[in-house]
Structure formats: structure tokens, C-alpha cells
Image 1: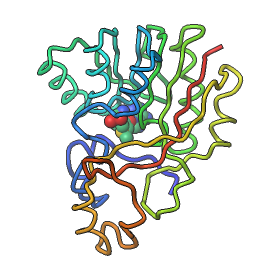
Image 2: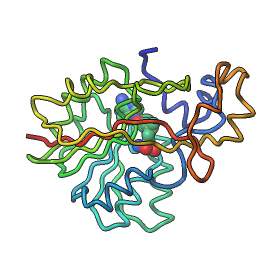
Image 3: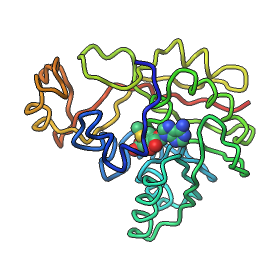
Length: 232
Ligand SMILES: C[S@@+](CC[C@H](N)C(=O)[O-])C[C@H]1O[C@@H](n2cnc3c(N)ncnc32)[C@H](O)[C@@H]1O
């Protein structure tokens, strides 16, 4: 269904019940492996904007690797948790409340934008507005690294919005040049054990866990697109 989700409510708890979730699916308590791989590959440069930073593990990781990082999210509860995680690790990150479809309160321009799961969290119209707003906060030649759920998954898992390659190629044109578009994976907080218990129940009525992929720690992984685009 193409609708916006109420993330503030998910972080506070009630929407977890509404969406029949027992965990915040993207809160794995550490940076996404696809993000650490980008960093190791030399794909990050200062200043970094972590778009839709959530509870901040990617931003905190990058700050710990020596980058100047700003993370934004519209969910105040997520930002509070992110600040706590940064403080706990002695990481300096600026966390800002901002709406992705406007980005009008971000005065700075960035050399790297990381989008780990924001784009696929937005409804179609929001995605279009976000893509229009993003160039305004980018330096010329800035690199956008975007990780979003792919529409190629055929395992029946209920991802929020699945994005097609064609949509990405149409959206990131004009102000952007796409340099890379690859298949990758996004690690979730759902465990095999949890999903096996829930399969066939109210939360996942049609789930066949044998069709799903898990990482070495038994965490569900989802197929994503990893896009790198350069701001022209
Ligand atoms: C799937 S989570 C990903 C969080 C984090 N980047 C990660 O990889 O763990 C998507 C995040 O985008 C935020 N978000 C969703 N819609 C937004 C909007 N319109 N403006 C700003 N943030 C938004 C949510 O609050 C949530 O924290």
C-alpha cells in the first residue's frame, strides 16, 4: 500500500502494536553492514548527512571513523535515542529534526548523503518531493549513497515500499548522475527464530520462512538496491 507510515508512533511503541511488530525492524543496534562496507571502500567524505538517521547507529559509526556527521529525522523520539547512543560512545554527531520532503531547515551543504532506508519509507509522492529537495543540501559533486528495498524480492515478506530499478533511474536524473546501481542486502532486527514463531499468525499470515535469507547471526536480510549518484 502506498501510504506514509507514522514513524514517531513506531518509536514510541503504539504503532508497533498497530503494525503488529514486536521489534523496530531496522534497529539492529549497530551500523548496517552495507554502510560499513561503503566506508571501508573509501566512499564517504566529510561532511556527511545521514538522511532519516533513526536511532543513529550509522551516524555514530561514521563519526567514530572521523567524519563530521549530521543526522536528520522527523521523529523526535528517534533523535533522542540517537543522541543517547552518540553520548554513550563519545561520538560527536549533530542530530537535527527535519522533514525529508522539504529539508528547509538544513542550512549546510554536504559532500556525502547517506540514505539507509529512508527513501523506501516514504510514499510515492513524498519520494518525489524528497528527491527534489535533496540537491539543495548537496555540494557540487556530492555523492548520494542510497539503500532501499528492491521490488525484485519474491519471498512474500511484507516490506513497506518496494522500489523498482526503473523508478530510481527516473528519479535520480537531471541534477544527478547515477554512477552505481547494485543489488545488496539490508540487515533487519527480525530473527529466524522470531519469524518461525510468527509465520502463519496475525503478523505474517502468508510467510514461508524457508524462502527468506538470514545472515550469520540469524537476522533476516532484505534485498535492496544500493545506488550511488553524483550531484551535478
Ligand atoms: C527504515 S528507518 C531507517 C533508519 C536508519 N537510517 C537505519 O538504517 O537504521 C527510516 C527512518 O526515516 C525516518 N523518516 C520517515 N519519513 C520521514 C520524513 N518524511 N522525514 C524525515 N524522516 C523520515 C523515520 O522516522 C525512520 O527513522
